[in-house]
Amino acid sequence: MSEFTRILNAAQVGDAKAQDDLLPLVYNELRQLAARKMARESATQTLQPTALVHEAWLRLGGDEQPTWENRTHFFCAAAEAMRRILIDRARSKQAVRHGGGQERLDIDEMEIAAPMKDDELLAVNDALERFSRHAPQKAELVKLRYFAGLGLKEAGQVLGISEPTAVRWWTYSKTWLYQAIRETHGPAKG
Image (cartoon, rainbow, N blue to C red; front, side):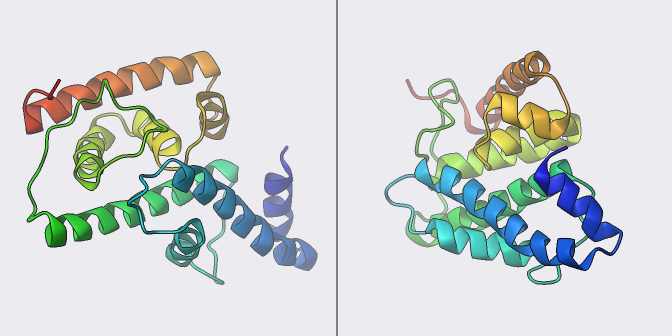
């Protein structure tokens, strides 16, 4: 059992010390997720990791944090909050600076750690929203990898699946998303 889960369990049964310990622990987890994600963002990205943490913290409930069932529940909620923040910023910048125009994206060329343009991020997000309706658990894996910056092994642990299963889900997810983006945005440049 992780330290995070132990403190969560104690806080849920009313342990006052655990409740006090939970706040900095949740915030620390968010800081680590944001640092990993922002380290891979484009140099044109103006959002700083600290700002991403603060915004995600507020979206998760701020000082009135919900009751987290476990570490998985927290990580999934944090990845979703960060995804929404980055997508909202990309949409805002796209509308203002680029007239809302879309460019084609080659998902085969895209690496998780590669910086991404706003229009590419929006294309991935649109496909991911459709994928969530088709395969919700696999979509959670994508969010954890792509938006929270977790590796396959770590994301698999959060979701309670083996690393080989995470690899299979990741391969399937990338293929599905690539096809969805091609259908929406046409053949990729290359």
